[in-house]
Image (cartoon, rainbow, N blue to C red; front, side):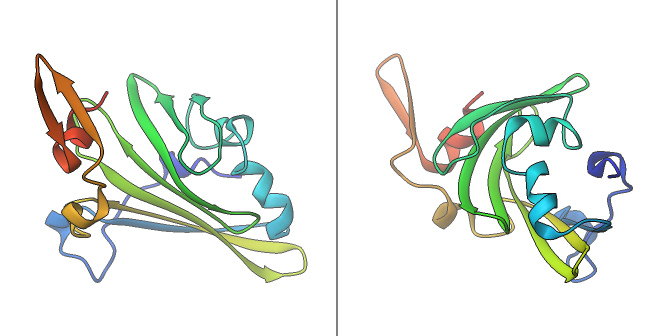
Length: 152
């Protein structure tokens, strides 16, 4: 399977280039059930997404991905077993994004992996980040999107 992070990233045609949305599709020579092994746990994700993955793939779990010199904090949003994994990730230097990985069967022994990454600012970040997320620093609290953006 090709390394998704090595592909040339191009903005989705319906997005303005400045919005930095990325959508990639890869046809895989295996069933969607077999391809799910590349999404369902840290070991599978390490085979194609990042050099090191420390993450339990279950809703609400938080972990890290390291790819080269970049480390990202990852939050598992949702898991549709055998079909879809939705994440939020961010690094200290970058803005938070929603990353959706979806498997689609395209035959008995073939599937398609669709990877979409959207910066939270594109999808209405205030509604996308729970206000209950907070960081407390010296008696003052930062909530919602600001807390997400500051989290490391």
